[in-house]
Image 1 (cartoon, rainbow, N blue to C red):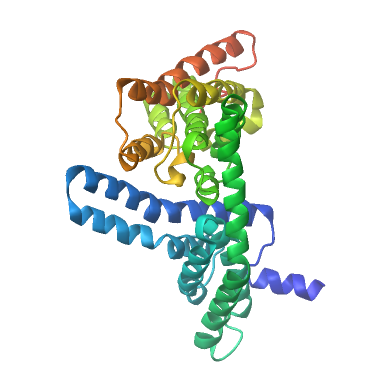
Image 2 (cartoon, rainbow, N blue to C red):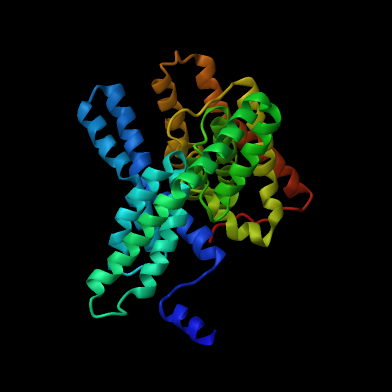
Length: 347
């Protein structure tokens, strides 16, 4: 057992929740951003502006989402070059065979293939053949065996959430908004989760509401401590920046979570806010305004006649209500001493 532990240490194979559920998942989201997400944005701009070449570029970017996610995961696992480059084939196979649940299939299979590749890396004199061979064979075989099942499970779960939200928009609006919003602020990827589940429709709208409550909420709540720099870095960057402060004082998380529970059902029951763009956008909130671009691209894709009520709903849910609700609750917490000066200060 000691020799095995020493081998894992020498190969930089760390079997831990942080390495796989935080580092790998977060990196996978970056791979999604750089392909599927930017491809969707370019495609939407191209369609609206009548620029066919942008549509073509967007298509190329979107097509590379599987390989990009796999390489990003390998990078997070600190895979050597031969393993890293071999993951291109693994990501393509897992994403294709995983269909709707492709991102989850890529995550699980790429982690396994990368760790096996790392294990054999530089162990033989024909490393140039052995390492890519082991990585690709294991990855593609696993893709054939389990990726379709992962895709089926993810598709079933995503459909269950979406159907449940349609049937019970109030309660599911609360649940989806709160859970996805919390995932956005935690050091995991809400965008990758939404992409893996294919979360769109009303459930996608609730997810956007929850993410916006966290990002805009923390940005406005902490303006006293962080000024304009903090407003921008959290409001269109990420509320994950507050994770260290949340650990020190969990009460600062109360306003955004309550806000999510309020804006989620408002989005589903009153404005019927739907995300029918790329599912990854459901978990992005106001990060680069991707959530709002996703909602708009969904309107375009559906051929929807966009009304002033639709625009009002998006603006209220994504910006105004989170800012107002979180500010009010935060003020109350400051007055009763639950939040003290400096508790929201970014390092």
